[in-house]
Length: 350
Figure 1 (cartoon, rainbow, N blue to C red):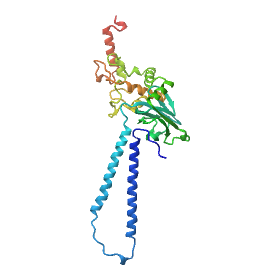
Figure 2 (cartoon, rainbow, N blue to C red):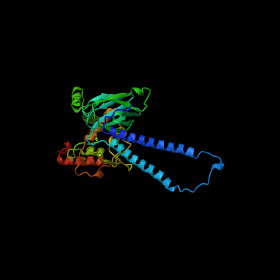
Figure 3 (cartoon, one colour):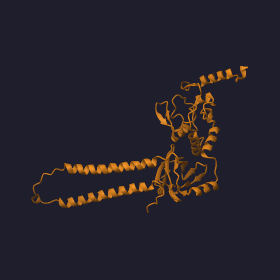
């Protein structure tokens, strides 16, 4: 009746669950016993059966039955918070997978480029991070054997991670009622030994990696026209002026024109692609068009993964300060023309 435990934190989740049940049962039985005892002892009697009431000081008793439950509750809260944070923060070396929920299927993409529907193959002994979004309504990714459950929401990313501890096939459910055929939105997670996983990858039909797909889309949509991704020495100055540089962007704090500061995570990059006017970066003009309706959820995932891969120091243009960014396209164009004239690059420069 109870699902098997097949992930690294399944045991701790189960222990916390059973301890909570045991504590709740203990106090439930204790309180019920006291209720019955006092009901029998102080049941209604005739007036002449009552003696004189003795003065009883109840303050120490009230403090005791208040402090002990408080200590137990705080200890359980701290334990639960630790488990929650462990479940919420994937290791930095976790393998990055993407998942898209849709009525009524799960679509997965491996970092190696392999795509699957309703099945997910993962290696045992390696942390797996799933970045998930939905194409339509709210779904919920639920693998009982791994003790993981996370809502999958349209318009934003959520993440979940797990590390399988033993090979096997484990049930995957959608735990959120998502429509009339919600019960059909099921699948399986296959945990394979590292050797079997490599063999499975070799026999599968692998397409380009997510990062390679994102780079191809980046070129297809001419994103580099405004967002430079190379090093500062080779960048075209006019490109830098039209949009923020993307190298080294992921994970950094971004100051917005509204005065807010946000972290450049998957959700922020996704929103910048589909709704670029929502959060304008401070110092830049709101000239980027939306790509909503032009790219699918999988293509957005690929673009996000490509931008995530652009690590390193943000590129810059030697000699061009930050104050030139805001509304600086004409000024930068003039500066570029001047440099071209000095170097004899312009056709009319002789």
